[in-house]
Length: 202
Image 1 (cartoon, rainbow, N blue to C red):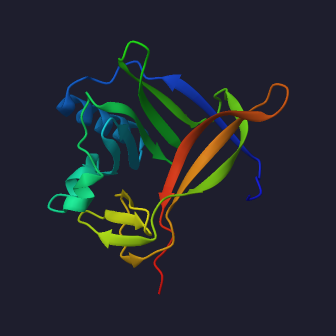
Image 2 (image 1 turned 30 degrees about the vertical axis):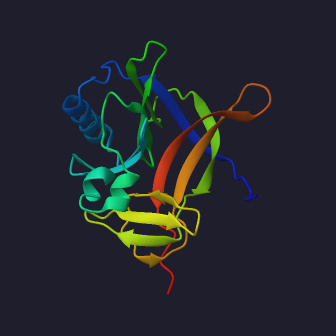
């Protein structure tokens, strides 16, 4: 297990007043607006029929489903973005994350978690970053800077927004864990920070 290094990372969270819409086109526009407002770079969404990756390019959402057009294997593991099948979505960057999820009434809700600005009162003061390895030791390049990654003989596939080709080291997802400062230190909540390539093998 890698050593955990605590650091000062004051952050806060707040509900986003405008709820995500239930129509597909409106949902995409909503996600693009949140990404532009909070300067977010990546999307990781879980739907009833699979996992969808995305990235934001000058305010426009490009999804792995679109990047997989014409590639049967990539399409098989990258469903379209649909409001009806969306379970949750995380839009993220090193400084912030917007989480979209379904509440007990099956309605979509959204909250923002971000680094504090000067003068703001943080909810969390300390935390640590964890680098999580994702599936993938071989990459098939797709369009728009995406790749179809597969893991050995296990048949695990996904299509992150990383431009890779051939044998690779597994990509990484950096997660920040915030600690509860009252009483014993424990993980109180977490957010996604950054997606990075593990590197191509020579």
